[in-house]
Length: 189
Image 1: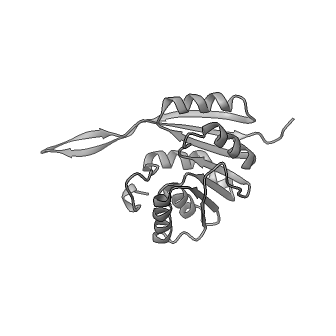
Image 2: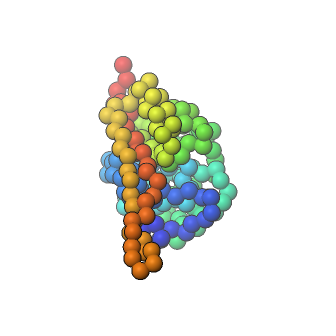
Image 3: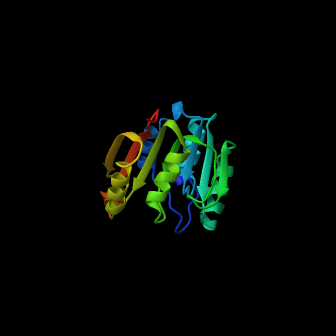
Protein backbone atom coordinates (compact mmCIF):
# COMPACT_ATOMS: atom_id res chain seq x y z
CA UNK A 1 0.00 0.00 0.00
CA UNK A 2 1.25 3.46 -0.82
CA UNK A 3 2.18 5.63 2.17
CA UNK A 4 0.03 8.44 0.76
CA UNK A 5 -3.14 6.40 1.39
CA UNK A 6 -2.75 6.76 5.16
CA UNK A 7 -3.83 9.81 7.14
CA UNK A 8 -0.71 11.23 8.76
CA UNK A 9 0.00 13.57 11.62
CA UNK A 10 2.95 15.47 12.99
CA UNK A 11 5.08 13.47 15.40
CA UNK A 12 3.08 10.27 14.82
CA UNK A 13 5.40 7.62 13.41
CA UNK A 14 4.55 5.47 10.42
CA UNK A 15 6.36 2.41 9.14
CA UNK A 16 7.13 3.28 5.50
CA UNK A 17 5.98 1.19 2.54
CA UNK A 18 9.23 -0.71 1.77
CA UNK A 19 9.93 -1.45 5.45
CA UNK A 20 6.30 -2.46 5.97
CA UNK A 21 6.47 -4.88 3.01
CA UNK A 22 9.60 -6.56 4.37
CA UNK A 23 8.25 -6.67 7.94
CA UNK A 24 4.93 -8.19 6.86
CA UNK A 25 6.77 -10.80 4.82
CA UNK A 26 8.99 -11.69 7.79
CA UNK A 27 5.95 -12.00 10.10
CA UNK A 28 4.69 -14.94 7.97
CA UNK A 29 1.07 -13.98 8.58
CA UNK A 30 -0.24 -16.77 6.34
CA UNK A 31 0.46 -19.02 9.39
CA UNK A 32 -1.01 -16.63 11.95
CA UNK A 33 -4.43 -16.10 13.51
CA UNK A 34 -3.44 -13.17 15.80
CA UNK A 35 -1.00 -10.30 15.27
CA UNK A 36 0.00 -7.76 17.93
CA UNK A 37 1.35 -4.42 16.66
CA UNK A 38 3.24 -2.69 19.50
CA UNK A 39 3.32 1.09 19.11
CA UNK A 40 0.96 1.03 16.15
CA UNK A 41 1.32 4.75 15.33
CA UNK A 42 -0.82 5.57 12.29
CA UNK A 43 -1.73 1.90 11.99
CA UNK A 44 0.00 1.25 8.66
CA UNK A 45 1.30 -2.21 9.65
CA UNK A 46 -1.94 -3.24 11.39
CA UNK A 47 -4.10 -2.05 8.51
CA UNK A 48 -2.06 -3.60 5.71
CA UNK A 49 -1.84 -6.88 7.65
CA UNK A 50 -5.61 -6.83 8.28
CA UNK A 51 -6.45 -6.10 4.64
CA UNK A 52 -4.09 -8.79 3.31
CA UNK A 53 -5.37 -11.34 5.83
CA UNK A 54 -9.12 -10.79 6.45
CA UNK A 55 -9.37 -13.66 8.98
CA UNK A 56 -6.43 -12.35 11.03
CA UNK A 57 -7.24 -10.80 14.41
CA UNK A 58 -5.04 -7.72 14.88
CA UNK A 59 -4.38 -6.03 18.22
CA UNK A 60 -2.93 -2.54 17.75
CA UNK A 61 -1.36 -1.25 20.98
CA UNK A 62 -0.71 2.51 21.13
CA UNK A 63 -0.19 4.97 24.01
CA UNK A 64 -0.03 8.35 22.22
CA UNK A 65 -3.43 10.16 22.11
CA UNK A 66 -2.65 11.83 18.76
CA UNK A 67 -1.63 8.48 17.27
CA UNK A 68 -4.76 6.83 18.69
CA UNK A 69 -6.93 9.38 16.87
CA UNK A 70 -5.10 8.79 13.57
CA UNK A 71 -5.19 5.04 14.09
CA UNK A 72 -8.96 5.11 14.62
CA UNK A 73 -9.46 7.34 11.56
CA UNK A 74 -7.28 5.09 9.38
CA UNK A 75 -9.07 1.94 10.58
CA UNK A 76 -12.39 3.56 9.68
CA UNK A 77 -11.04 4.82 6.34
CA UNK A 78 -10.02 1.29 5.33
CA UNK A 79 -13.02 -0.43 6.99
CA UNK A 80 -10.81 -2.75 9.04
CA UNK A 81 -13.19 -4.56 11.36
CA UNK A 82 -10.56 -7.12 12.38
CA UNK A 83 -8.39 -4.58 14.24
CA UNK A 84 -8.80 -4.11 17.98
CA UNK A 85 -7.18 -0.87 19.14
CA UNK A 86 -5.85 -0.97 22.70
CA UNK A 87 -5.05 2.41 24.27
CA UNK A 88 -2.22 1.37 26.56
CA UNK A 89 1.53 1.25 26.93
CA UNK A 90 3.32 -2.02 26.41
CA UNK A 91 4.70 -3.80 28.37
CA UNK A 92 2.02 -2.72 30.88
CA UNK A 93 -0.85 -4.22 28.90
CA UNK A 94 -2.41 -7.66 28.96
CA UNK A 95 -3.50 -9.14 25.65
CA UNK A 96 -4.23 -12.60 24.30
CA UNK A 97 -1.28 -14.69 23.05
CA UNK A 98 -0.33 -14.15 19.41
CA UNK A 99 1.33 -15.96 16.51
CA UNK A 100 3.11 -12.81 15.34
CA UNK A 101 4.24 -9.57 16.98
CA UNK A 102 5.54 -6.44 15.26
CA UNK A 103 7.47 -3.79 17.17
CA UNK A 104 8.19 -0.56 15.29
CA UNK A 105 9.62 1.30 18.27
CA UNK A 106 10.49 0.70 21.88
CA UNK A 107 9.92 3.99 23.71
CA UNK A 108 13.07 3.31 25.74
CA UNK A 109 11.82 -0.07 27.01
CA UNK A 110 13.45 -2.34 24.44
CA UNK A 111 14.51 -5.27 26.65
CA UNK A 112 11.21 -5.26 28.55
CA UNK A 113 9.27 -5.20 25.27
CA UNK A 114 11.27 -8.09 23.83
CA UNK A 115 10.60 -10.11 27.00
CA UNK A 116 6.91 -9.12 26.94
CA UNK A 117 6.68 -10.09 23.25
CA UNK A 118 8.28 -13.48 23.78
CA UNK A 119 5.96 -14.10 26.72
CA UNK A 120 2.91 -13.28 24.54
CA UNK A 121 4.10 -15.26 21.51
CA UNK A 122 2.88 -18.80 21.05
CA UNK A 123 5.62 -21.41 20.44
CA UNK A 124 6.79 -21.06 16.83
CA UNK A 125 5.50 -17.46 16.70
CA UNK A 126 7.33 -14.70 14.86
CA UNK A 127 8.72 -11.45 16.31
CA UNK A 128 9.72 -8.69 13.90
CA UNK A 129 11.29 -5.43 15.06
CA UNK A 130 12.45 -2.35 13.17
CA UNK A 131 14.98 0.24 14.31
CA UNK A 132 16.72 3.30 12.95
CA UNK A 133 19.20 3.60 15.84
CA UNK A 134 22.26 1.32 15.75
CA UNK A 135 22.30 1.25 19.56
CA UNK A 136 18.80 -0.27 19.60
CA UNK A 137 19.83 -2.80 16.97
CA UNK A 138 22.83 -3.94 19.02
CA UNK A 139 20.85 -3.99 22.28
CA UNK A 140 18.11 -6.09 20.67
CA UNK A 141 20.56 -8.57 19.14
CA UNK A 142 22.44 -8.90 22.43
CA UNK A 143 19.23 -9.45 24.38
CA UNK A 144 17.87 -11.97 21.87
CA UNK A 145 21.02 -14.10 22.35
CA UNK A 146 19.83 -14.68 25.94
CA UNK A 147 16.29 -15.74 25.02
CA UNK A 148 14.41 -18.71 23.58
CA UNK A 149 14.42 -17.65 19.92
CA UNK A 150 15.73 -19.36 16.83
CA UNK A 151 16.64 -18.23 13.35
CA UNK A 152 17.49 -14.59 14.08
CA UNK A 153 17.56 -12.76 10.76
CA UNK A 154 18.81 -9.18 10.54
CA UNK A 155 18.74 -6.91 7.50
CA UNK A 156 19.44 -3.27 6.81
CA UNK A 157 17.08 -1.67 4.35
CA UNK A 158 18.10 1.53 2.55
CA UNK A 159 15.51 3.04 0.25
CA UNK A 160 15.68 6.13 -1.93
CA UNK A 161 12.79 7.56 -3.91
CA UNK A 162 13.03 9.54 -7.13
CA UNK A 163 12.15 13.17 -6.39
CA UNK A 164 11.88 16.23 -8.62
CA UNK A 165 14.57 18.88 -8.23
CA UNK A 166 14.29 21.87 -10.51
CA UNK A 167 14.08 20.56 -14.06
CA UNK A 168 15.56 17.18 -13.11
CA UNK A 169 15.24 14.35 -10.64
CA UNK A 170 17.35 12.76 -7.91
CA UNK A 171 16.97 9.90 -5.48
CA UNK A 172 16.10 11.27 -2.03
CA UNK A 173 17.17 8.76 0.64
CA UNK A 174 15.11 7.70 3.62
CA UNK A 175 16.83 6.75 6.87
CA UNK A 176 18.29 3.24 6.74
CA UNK A 177 16.18 0.84 8.79
CA UNK A 178 17.30 -2.33 10.55
CA UNK A 179 14.83 -5.22 10.50
CA UNK A 180 15.21 -8.12 12.94
CA UNK A 181 13.02 -11.20 12.51
CA UNK A 182 13.11 -14.21 14.81
CA UNK A 183 11.00 -17.15 15.85
CA UNK A 184 10.13 -18.37 19.33
CA UNK A 185 11.25 -21.93 19.94
CA UNK A 186 8.58 -24.55 19.29
CA UNK A 187 9.34 -26.49 22.49
CA UNK A 188 11.16 -25.64 25.69
CA UNK A 189 13.65 -27.89 27.50
